[in-house]
Length: 261
View (cartoon, rainbow, N blue to C red):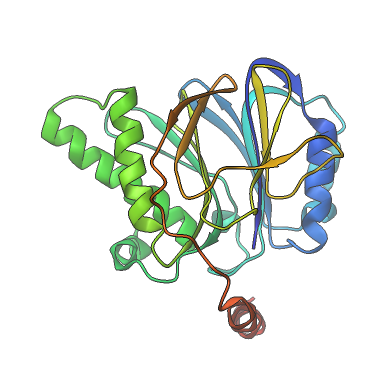
């Protein structure tokens, strides 16, 4: 599995110590790193297809204060797609109303044929990028039907519907930023954690990064946060993922790695 880190906060906070620990996990998750500093309807993306602990750029970057209200970061253990810049997370796209969407994914899509059509048009090769392209396409279709952009609640309900369908038989831990709010989803028990700091700051991480009071993110439902507060909570209806085929998955990846990397 890859690993995710995210921040959703009202005040700007310094996150260097959390990022240093997070990126230190790249000894295992060695196939790329990335982070997105998230602003209203914009994302500043920094990423490389190298292990984070081998990146001279990241080593220098993290020496300077990284102070954010919203961000996501990712370290990649490749299961789909070669070790290329275009396969490193996060990914960002605009819908037809001009809204920016940024996505980081921890997991694997084993079976969802509706994603296959994006193989020829995506920039990279990952199933994760195809998830974002699929979500954007469906949002565009709905907005074309309505002849207007989706409002905040409509976006939540629509993304909830899409994520619920995508979770069937697939490993789907997601952080998504829509230019205003952070969407959080996990369907794999205790593989995404959150830390509350004060009343208006939340951190998210695949694994607890400090000795603070990290708690598992409620799973099998879509959660939406703004400024560290939960504003929407979906019904518990996503399908739980069980790692029944985990050994085969990594064996298959190892065969693929030696064949094409």
